[in-house]
Length: 254
Image (cartoon, rainbow, N blue to C red):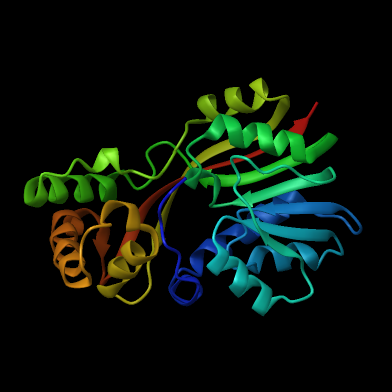
């Protein structure tokens, strides 16, 4: 699992695009009144609550206790609990499992797919979006080049993410007892808030695994160097635009 330390307040304040874009994944889910649904990697619960509006009996699970505490505070009527997506075992099967922007943090993807299959009833559906092949490749290269040049650190050894192609992920799901019914890989340039500061907030939210031994001041200096390395490609009209590639899919447990 990733070593990322999640700041739930920073996430809610500055990374709202995650749940904003995720609303269209909820539409793909088409939750129904009375269905039992699990939000796998629910973060601070915004999309779990969106699912609950349908009348579905939804629960949220996330590996971060800080995110779960924030979710419980915001949506006290929804059950939320801490769990590891690579080893999670459901007490009773769900009608659907939903996941947005979480699966790419779980590098043991085969274990995750097996856990999701175990959580579903036969005929239950799995609906997800995650980072696809090539996601944030310009940003990752910037981090890699700066850490190697300034510190001799090979960033690929610290990379916390798994960004599969359609072929890779569909095959993985089929191996674990799913029939894939829809899959799409698409480019989605994603604007970050707060002008030049936006990339700092993004790195603070998502980049812990690359900088564990550095002080706050050292991180800020590394951030400055990373931003200069990627500015020509990703800084547009006064804002940072992250080079997102997304993989969206639906599958049914057979």
